[in-house]
Image (cartoon, rainbow, N blue to C red; front, side, top):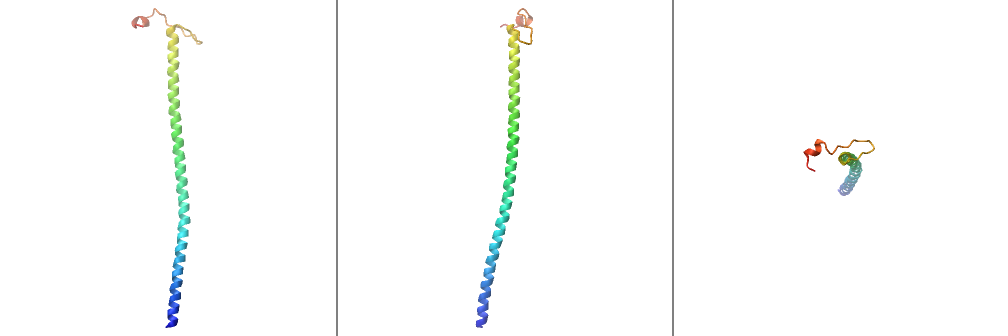
Amino acid sequence: MKLNKEYTYKITLLIFCLVILLEIIVCFLIYFNSYNIYEKILFNTFESSRRKTTQFTQNVNLYIGNVLVKFINYLKLITKHTFIFNGKKNSNKIDSIKKNSKIFFNNNL
């Protein structure tokens, strides 16, 4: 009986140690696998964020470029009309509007 008690104690202690060792091994496996999964998710998130930021900046640049071109074209048009109405000629030799034309008679300046 004494031998049976002694072996039972040793076997339970051995089983307990094996279970603890198995738990430690499982924890390490989960930790290393989860770190790889975390790295993949983090990389995908950064890549998606970089793509969307690049797309956003390209859209903003395109919008600002269009607004500036539109503004510059309006300024050129205003300049041409100013040259015409003031009777000045620029390098393209645009003929000025005569002061006695219908456009001046119909509008009170």
